[in-house]
Image (cartoon, rainbow, N blue to C red):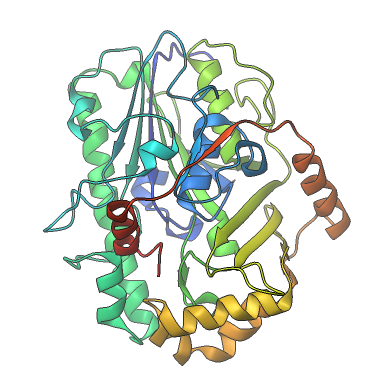
Length: 397
């Protein structure tokens, strides 16, 4: 990472805008620093966030969906010694007229949620992690929640969804830059590395789908990451890929904490990886004879494309697709684009783009990841309030 190792970094502000596609990075954010094409650890928020804060691949930390939690014994950004840490969740609060402050992501990450205004007072040295609205539904300036948004728009033209998505990302940009302004007001920019990234991308008609509860697709797997510091010139780094699992070891190294050996790369001393893996595992329907009811995908990507593999049978994929067509908040849109939806969901393996890695190399990479040591995971059950909150955001049917 050019120029950073020479700086005296004592603070890190990690902003994770939810559901921001690689091709939707606002130019004004890219102009602030070094931009890296990034492979998300997962296309599902709890899984990706768990990889970001621990540096572990999803098969290692074991967090598959909301209700699972990182074990308290697992080292994370919130347990690094010698620094103040905080987690804020502002995905809807700053934008909806009737926000619901209940969140379950803090439980997933084995931490507690802080008031977003703490960024004005937190004492250095600190690591401040914030989940921002990004491009997550509801798109644009819609005043309700994600479920209500999709039920209102139904089979609206794809262009409507795209336009409103861009409005949402722009609103998030303004909010993110207000956070930078607060750090500037405090005189902390020289001592603080600011990182802008996303947990996963978003489908805006690809495969006949909307959102991110779908088979893995490049528009879901690729996200932007921008490292921002006054010493950085604006440029896009093209020699390799950043991965979510690289963020934790890099941040730990910058603030002077030694951490155990991790699968991620410390970018202060190592080159970017050539490729990265993205995982998805989520239960959709109750298991029955011949089907598991789970959607399970694994994938490997380089800068030019990748391979996606379904780890369940065709009958299982068909059952999940039918469930979405019947009950999903986006069902009218999916039905209108059924010719795309069916092959997208039923494919067992797919190649996207022109990857430089072979399918055999990708399978070997995935096997290596599965063979890595596993961390403890806490499997919890969701209470009714948490389920309602996730349904509002569109995560549950």
